[in-house]
Amino acid sequence: MKISVITVCRNSAVTIRDTLASVRDQTHPSVEHIVVDGASTDDTADIVQQHGHVARFVSEPDQGLYDAMNKGIRMATGDVVGILNSDDFYTGPQVLTRVAHALEISGADVLYADLNYVHPHLPHRTIRHWRSGPYRRDQFRFGWMPPHPTFFVRREFYEKLGGYDPHFRLAADYELMLRFLYKHRLSACYLPEVLVHMRTGGISNASLRGRWHANREDRRAWLHNGLRPAFFTLWLKPIRKIPQFFVR
Image (cartoon, rainbow, N blue to C red; front, side, top):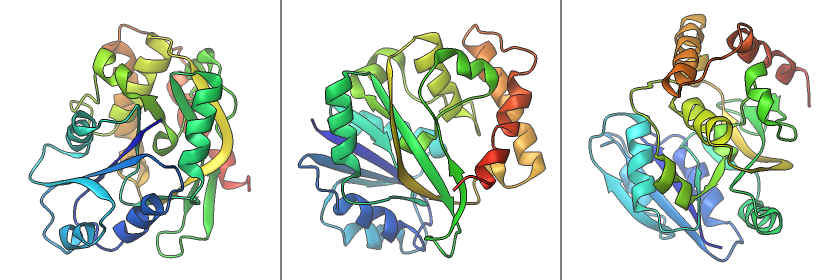
């Protein structure tokens, strides 16, 4: 099973070395690493080009994060596609081997796992632990979603169901997972392990205002797919994050 890992970045010289090294060091025998850079003005491109394992590298202006992800997906040739952004890194060299094994054993269309948010400058210090739990489709109505950097999809479903909708500035990942899992009922496998460390400081969680705008986009994601959330769905989505600060 060939796995394509898409990394999108812009001016990520401070963090991208960890991302690149964590993919380079994977023991899985068939990994394709694609890096899509949004015309960085720092040393990002030089750093990427120093890593010979990168199969495809593009550096050019784009229409934002999700447009760059779609570019990477279109270039991918793997059986399975995962997204690992330039603030994120895999927890160890066996991650993609375990992903491939779980997908082969389960036959699932999609796999997701657990994630740790870590301190931006002390990446071995955990701030939040996101335990996803076993999959049940109706959990989406109770504010559930899996961590996007642990979300692996068989590439054929990007071809059948489409990629990220760039009209969603903050919630295109949520809209895609809602579309794939809830609307189209793809089968999902949960791998109960922490696969990814993500540095804190994402756009949608950086402030209350950012969270408010993301919450509005979450609601639009349901309506965009001809679906209606329960009256409590989008209130529960941020509330579900609170226990993540206390679980280790």
